[in-house]
Image (tube, rainbow, N blue to C red; front, top):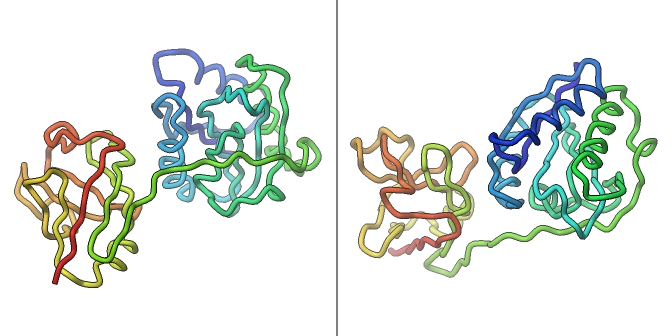
Length: 257
């Protein structure tokens, strides 16, 4: 049985996700469809890349992953598809996949053009890809090899000898705040020194927790989550609302002896 995941900015109040699923189901025989998320913010390929990058590896090898975000990107009337790490990917050529795989090369990618920006044209291209993968048809038999790969860009932390200025990249369902600082970058810059994490000017956090329960209920903590990114949270609370932290805002870390 083939497995297909869907990540989109369609939301759950309209019928677009249902039509995409119907298109895939009608084109395949033994395919199982799993939703990763349809609640990506409108056209936000950075948020989508964070979600898909941190989830796809948990699925079995040969799973197909559909990234339907900013699906009608007018600059590229085509889908691109490729295989990486034993998984298959398809989505619009809008920079999403270069955010997930910064080293993705044009020679790895195949293009599936479609005629117009009508929704069903794009859905048909995805359904055709799903059928071909189910039947184990090589990509070069149903897609065109070679296209100009759109590049995605995202904000990177600003690092100095004694500080990091970083950006909030995601707010999860529990309103935990995820920052674009990896544990590797934190350790490399900090070099074992003491530190203060400023999520607002007057209330720094001075230690890294290992779990939410490391602090009393209602208190703020910082930890590295399962994806390896710094997370600001409140034990049994909503950090984003209670601390007035929003996506794309900055936090500051100072290191000192």
